[in-house]
Image (cartoon, rainbow, N blue to C red):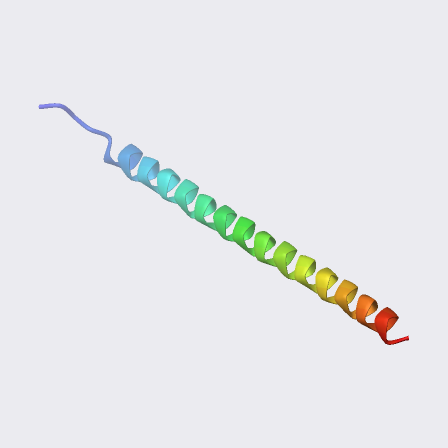
Length: 58
């Protein structure tokens, strides 16, 4: 019989779970940043279109 250290196995699984959780949070952060950049880009495009429309009106 081999004596296994079950506490080590549990701690190893906890560390793996923590890394997976951090990876998921990092992916959410990247997605949120991409959405923010897209919205900022759309806002700038809309502002530019508004300025062009005002110039055409004058």
